[in-house]
View 1 (cartoon, rainbow, N blue to C red):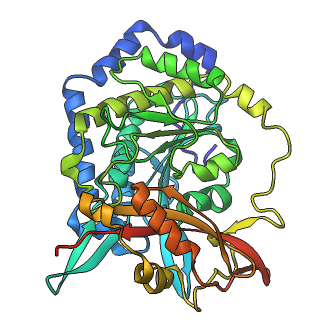
View 2: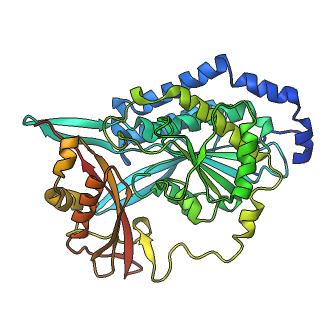
View 3: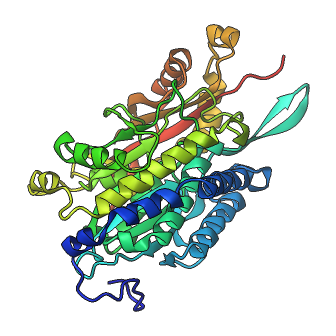
Length: 453
């Protein structure tokens, strides 16, 4: 039970089997009407409005720790509250700090709940999350003059946040069909090694042991034949397929393909590592990913509406199951490994002292080493290929750089060059935990941007 005495159902000890008997054909027809006609147009209009604001120039690309990210967080807070979500944070959110060299970057998560109607199941939570930060701005010289480029991030991830907001509205309007409680979370600082979702799972949310599943929404706005609507989960097909099949019977016009484990990492990862069943909905990367061309005019709004409706019904079916993921939980009863082994790899956020590149931070590494020595492949220039390559590597205890790999690529030409220049990095000052040197994993975006002339 969430503190504060907030309850939605006043029906006493109504259990899930009784609720199922009450779900008549007329009720399902009511939902079908709710999500068609004028309401379909309203959903499309709302999604478009959310995306246009979140990716507007006013928010300056929503980079972690900036005013633009704070404005995005406050917009999400206001929207969830207006939709009838009980807010578990104030407008400042779950505040946390990321140390980057000698600088402190402040970010936040926004968290709210719609409590379940079943007195026996409302203390079981399903988390629905999306990150609201992006890359910010970049200044380059064009004809000798500085030009500021804004990474609007309409698809990454204004689209996911828009779907999150509209799901909260649809759940609120149909709340008596949700016996379990739904937690809605906007994550900050995803572009800093998923810091917001890591903080939520490992530090901030006291009820994490009651989270039965996590639905992650990231990059849903470009669904077409080239970028199909996809679902990734580590749950077995024996438990996933019945939910998908039942969801497909509802008034939906789209169903996701099942993605494999090569899917790009996102905010589902800390939940995945905590052995919580995850369901990651996305339409995946595209040529405009992590470029200034990721703008609202390229969002496919009709498809986004269809995806939102499907995810709503998927959530509805999941929360009405009598027992969630029995097979998954049975296979997870062995003792969990610690998040960090004694001789294992630490994340930057877990270090008391972050790794340093010549007594400075990762930004200095990018500016003084990567962008100084990187060579833009001629073949990529001739083909007009540009974008952001996300590279992961480990700083060893002796400061050397190892295990360099691309976690989000653009093209083999750019990916290989990003790996090359990071692989030949000079030694770093290693990170420390408890005064001892440790192996530390770092993920950085390497920008390839073509300039006029």
